[in-house]
Image 1: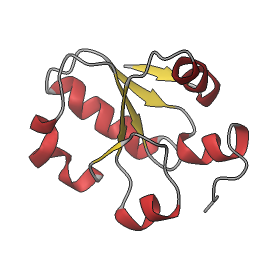
Image 2: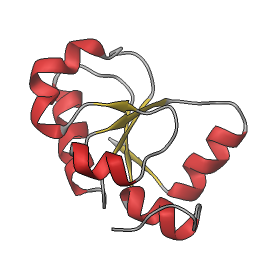
Image 3: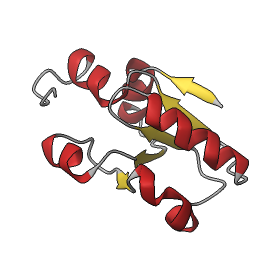
Image 4: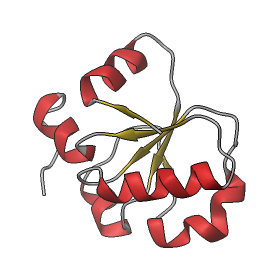
Length: 105
């Protein structure tokens, strides 16, 4: 599994090379803040819903700090996903380093 920093992901998004963004946080967390265009599947539903995702698409997994997303990314790799990337620092790092207007919790 690869890891990407928020700066690397921001650069990729700004250049139109958008991966699938998979947000695995809980509903209350997503209600506070989120990246536009994310697919939202809470971590607890990944096993049941991973079939909704393209196994061959570059997929960046996002959570609050990067720990749940790492666990989900490892699971997806075991399930045969070929290009899974964990967002280091999660949405918290995004809010602190890329988008200071985003809610921090």
